Amino acid sequence: MKHILLLNGPNLNLLGQREPEVYGSQTLAELETAVTAYGAELGIEVTCLQHNHEGVLIDWVQGAPARADGLIFNPGAYAHYSYALRDAIAAIAPFSVVEVHLSDISAREEFRHTSVTAPVCAAVFAGKGQQSYRDALNFLKAL
Image (cartoon, rainbow, N blue to C red):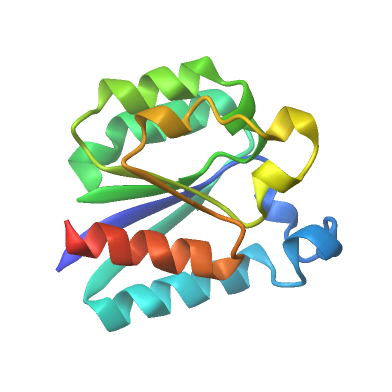
């Protein structure tokens, strides 16, 4: 069975209450339960982690190859400016990291249009809510 690490970044702990018109009403716990269940259907074990602090996320990215077969990462706002996270992802190549976003970042505020982490990821899925995470699982399963 493949083991995938699911990492959610800053403010995703507020899902369900934070801007529901953008992110929906599903809580992080509900999202993680749904993604874990979908992973099980695919024969994939999913371990979920969330943190608001960049340094902790960097430590988890760096440690991912020792813990899992792939990484699904929603870096939240860090996607737009964290060169430290970008470098951490690049440093673990060729380990597969897939970036996900619940919302369509290209259709939102100007500062969200560019992801500095995306170019060092194996794929990016965004703008489909929970389906973005499912697409990431399907992508990693196919590798």
